[in-house]
Length: 243
Image (cartoon, rainbow, N blue to C red; front, top):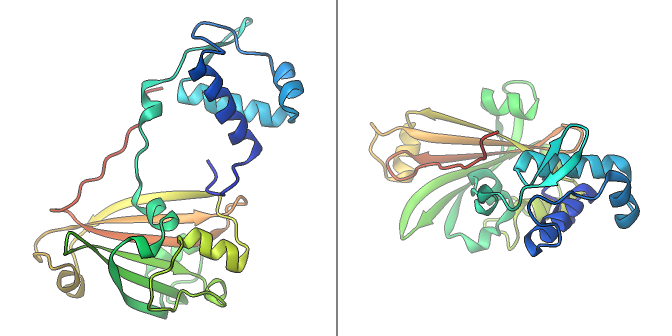
């Protein structure tokens, strides 16, 4: 689903139908209204209805039966599970709400992996904003925000003060960019000497590196979030339905 503050029409329709299923308006086993009925009632286009029904089917709320129609299955058990992904959490949560300190901000050469995710030439420069996050009084993770230089201009990303809003909201208000989706990658590697020092971790403990490449609706890369987590202090958990 889009990260925009106002969900797209298909997402709004998904939410409306989910609420009706949960309220018993469409009980398990009942037939869902036809595409035409949904178009007429909600005043949306057929592609919007088709997209919403696809999401509901993929999430397990409804099922399609050949030649009969779409039937309600009910609220899937997995619907209550909302995994918190490190990259998205950093993009949407206000910096001021997370204790930490700014350790670097400015134009620097991009590492090869980040260059590939931003779709820029290797060794070219991008803007970096890196914060050391502190939890329960101890260093917890290093969070780096990488973005093209032109996207950083006219923002408060060079400020040493934590932003009172999330990165998404800040860039949206200052630059008019629209985040649509995140492609996330997770790797493991041994820490560099500076990372060992900043995170106060043993040098023989690996790091979990989470890369979240944020793209607009056309697929154009906008921002890369890199989250470094000492493997002895963190574990990553996700949940998803079995198709």
